Length: 188
Image (cartoon, rainbow, N blue to C red):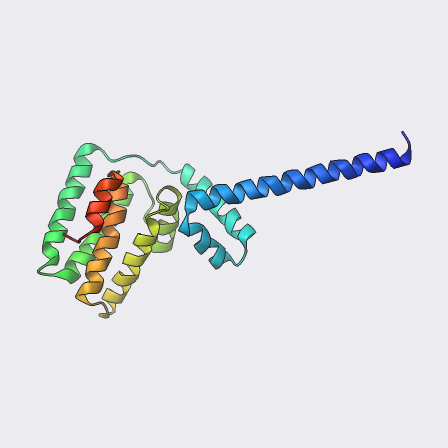
């Protein structure tokens, strides 16, 4: 083989490697965008770079894969549903307490499912791996709960937070999409 042939082979190998890397990165991006939905855009914005965000999301996936996540036993799911109904009924008389109790109940459900319940951002990130389409509701409800803690949330704000929380609650309990759509229509 002459030098020209070797150079052409090296160039071809490098070109194939670059194309393969480009295809891999595009496929990875598409998979993560599909899996994480709106959370993907949020991660990119927070990280300031698509590649850093994707690396973070992949680490998050691996961390959540190591968790012992489990579905709720039917008895536990029924107990949580009854607790939610009681909280919703209490909303009429005491919306502030109901919102606080809804937040606590969500944490209990997450814990029962096997999610660690450290700080909010960690919980939301871990929830996003398997519940990406509803985690934005959790974030929205939490923002209102923070306003509530400062005495800045109106009753309507708290009602909206309950609706947001209900969407995640239903998803964590494994309720079908149609039931979730009905539940999103009102806080009662």
